[in-house]
Length: 635
Ligand SMILES: Cc1ncc(COP(=O)(O)O)c(C=O)c1O
Image (cartoon, rainbow, N blue to C red):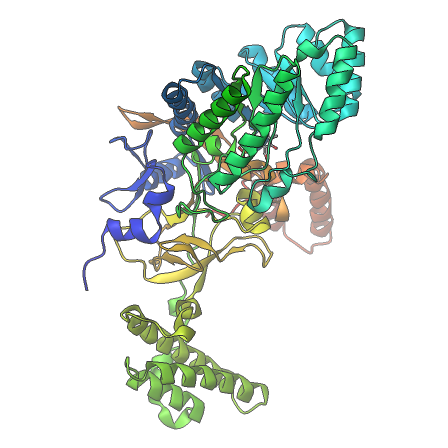
């Protein structure tokens, strides 16, 4: 058999196809992160995690690679710049980062900072998001687009903010909002910067297809747009309507859906221009997808186009339609969120080392006492000894039947617990042997296609699925998961990844594999005392903010890292994860009060001579340590 190489690991985790050249495997067999695609410089994730642990920052750790974030902003802007040059497009492009995708202050601040070069703006959709964006725009002036439903307070705040110098465009999602905006603008004495969201009949694809289409939750129907134009004309405010917006959903997997929406949206723009509306911007919303599984297909976790193709299609379609209609081309705005932030964050955590071989019964010696074995176990043992590729199919059927027989005999009281355990153990040996044979077959018999699954083990990882990758649980989205070390060795186990919540849903059973979706993760057998880590990749979009507090695990440690030529990397910031005290506060439990109550109880027991003073003090020490400590596991 040929030796395992890192190329084999790249292949089985499909790393080169989803990594967009930001990730690779080095000669040591560790996953690396590159500051920019194809860069010869790289940060070794295993070395980084070992160094962080030396600094007492323990897993799970959310690693945020700030160079990657900057790289994504620049590659989207660059793609549009090229498309504009290529097509001779007579207007500009601007990205507005939708902060719903990741509202963490340090992240949005970094995006705003990197985005200065590209005239980047922020998109918000709620009052808290508006306030966060205003705060950022105070230090670093940038334009804001405000989508979403708005009440009076929301509208009034935007208009007052405009008056004192913030650049905020208010996008009307419902007709009644427009009436309110006009009323408040006249009271405040400000000319509002207005946009309108149109409800297109075009839809996206996949889980978010309902964000578009005529029954979409947001936007104005064409008849309502005409009513809005009429109202604005009557109020002498038509010139204030400068932006037309549409959004047909996130993670649009098929490029033809994007083209359809563009054609329809640009036609609406062109017709409005012909009616005398002074539109200057076409905001095409989000939807630029991420190839999570690397299949470059229209699968839900993939996309069948590239960023360059997307930019080119946008510019080409808009130009064509505007030229045909004889109207000026608009400045293009996109609200790409996922495509900007997905790549830059990686969650690394340890697999809980549950090495227990020493505790396993000595089955080998039990098998030598053949007179004590049940007939079922003896038959299984015969299969194990004689199995080869010619008898594979028959032996497989017999094994399935014999293991069912063992369970029935046990239920009826004809088999002891030990005999059932031996039957299970022999069966696992048969399956391992069969799997070696199946792996070498050119064509695998139908009933054995899923054969490896019967060998799948459950590996427990120190994280909460609900906190760190909720979309894996909620909508079955695939995220690449890869061990970050030993990738120069053949993975000898296949596993599902279970988290540490007490929820049977907290398990990942779908992975990115060599041929798209796989039902297991190839992984290594963990050596005794080994610290073994896996990375969850492309999790920067939506996951942090959608994450919930199931079992009260809360936020993980987060570390901002930039590439540094001298020391390889520099830690810019450490944001400590939730402590037990923090997380209890969310659910109205007060740490001090808990200590006080327990303290009283302990003193009472000491006074009754039920426990010693040492026991009392030791328990209080433990309680204090746990309250101040991280919610995740680490010894
Ligand atoms: C109005 C609007 N703009 C932008 C986005 C961001 O979309 P994406 O992350 O797919 O780019 C969304 C999210 O669905 C949205 O609702």
